[in-house]
Structure formats: C-alpha cells, structure tokens
Amino acid sequence: MSMDARKLYEGKAKIVLATDEPDRYLMVFKDTATAFDGKKKGLIQDKGFYNAQISARLFQVLQSQGIPTHFIKLVDERTMLVRALDIIPVEVVVRNIVAGSLSKRLGRPEGERLPSPVVEFYYKSDDLGDPMICADHAIAFGFATPDECIALRELALEVNSILRPYFLERGLELVDFKLEFGKPKGAEVPGAGAEKQYPARSRLILGDEISPDTCRLWDVGTGEKLDKDRFRRDLGKVEEAYAEVYRRVCQTA
Ligand code: TMP
Ligand code: ASP
Image (cartoon, rainbow, N blue to C red; front, side, top):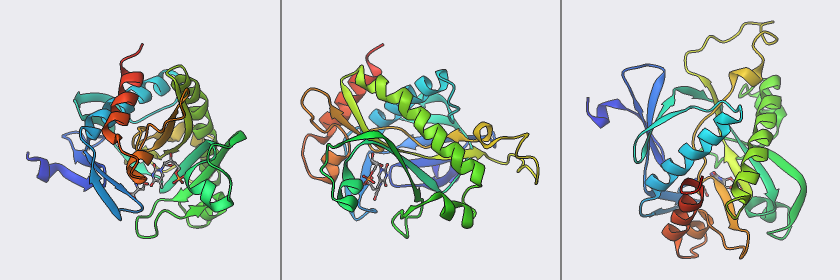
C-alpha cells in the first residue's frame, strides 16, 4: 500500500501511518519546522533523522526505568514503529528553569532556577493555540479523569527525574520539556468503579516524541541553546544544534 493510502494524520513535524496491525502505527519524522502556532515555517536539514534517533534513545532509557512508552523500534533512519494510542488532549510541560512562555507570563528572567519542578497543563488545540489549563478544566471538559490528572503529573515528574541527570551527564541542562500521553487504542474503557482495578498510572503510555523540538536544552558549560529556540528566535546554527544533541545523546553509552 502507498504511503498516502496508509496516512492517518499529517502534523507539523510528523506523519502517522497505519500498519497491517491495528494496534501499531508508524511515525515518520519530517524536516519541516513550525513555531508560534504554525505562523513561522521552515526546514531544518535532517531534523527528522535527528529527532527520530534522539526520541528512540530517550524512550528506551525511560522504558528501562519503568516508564511505559509507545516506542517499539526504529524501522528506518527516521521512522518509528509505535503502539497506537488515543492521545489525551493535554500537553504536560515540566520546567526546571524559567524560559519561554513562563518568563513572559510572569515577568521572570530566563535562566532563573526553580526550587522544584513546575508542571503545567495545556489544552492540545491548534485552533486555540494550545491554551494553558488547570486540572479542573481537563476534568470539567472530559479531557482526563481526576486520577488521570494526578498520574499525568506524577509520570511527567518521574520522566524529569530520569532525563535530567541523563542529559546532565552529557553536558546538557534540561530546562523544560513537553510530553503527551495516551491510552492504548481501542482499549476497553473501564466502567464505573473499575478505576481501582485499573489505576490511571497503569493505563497511561508516553507518546509523541522527546527531542530538541519539544525540550529546551542548554549547554552546561556555555549556556548555549541547543534546541528549537535557535529556529524560533533566528539564532542561526540550527542544524548544528540538533546534530550536537544527537551526538551527545545517541553516540555516547
Ligand atoms: P513554552 O515556554 O513555549 O511554553 O514551552 C515549554 C516547553 O514545551 C518547551 O520545551 C518547548 C515545548 N513546546 C512544545 O513541545 N510544543 C509547543 O507547541 C510549545 C509551545 C512548546
Ligand atoms: N510546535 C508549535 C507550532 O508549530 C510551537 C513551538 O514549538 O514553538 O506552532
């Protein structure tokens, strides 16, 4: 079957393809880049390759530490075989250091260290520009149940406590990042009272990607930005930054 016939969804940075198995998807990482809700568009040479490889490695690290992820294997340089998920429309951001929208919203200087990680929820909606929400909004509008909101926060903090030292060992400060979680596609929705038997923590699976598109990573020595902010802010040396993160994450043991 052609790629077009299998295409389920084409996003700003990835294409999702059906496979012969209903519970498996292929995720193809593209070189296209957007920022500011798609208003800024561009191409980052080989970004698809770097992000697929970096995400694969980070999913493997997380999986080995007990975080369930959708990652199964890389099938080629920029294509990942994943478990099919129904994505929860809540983007979970974890921040260790003030940057980006937090700096703007609360007037704090970029680089200010937070005493403990801050977790934020955003409603995943391109039309609305991913507005920030709180758990009560997610519950009120049926995006997630109360126990799922707790589990989203716990899982995101666990991911942070695994990835932060992992990056630090490679000379990278994990400033902040965004995660998306889902539930296995077609999985039976537990009925009332079944929550105890099927706690949210064991239903949720980490999806999407973890890459310089979705993380802020600063060089520990120089503070140099090695992530998509180089594209967002026209800082130059964009490809070089992705290549450097790839080298440090994937070419070290
Ligand atoms: P922010 O400071 O712009 O809110 O971004 C916080 C983190 O989330 C940062 O690491 C970049 C990531 N992010 C995405 O992955 N997708 C997005 O659409 C946005 C706005 C941020
Ligand atoms: N991915 C988002 C967009 O295309 C924003 C971003 O990453 O800055 O608009």
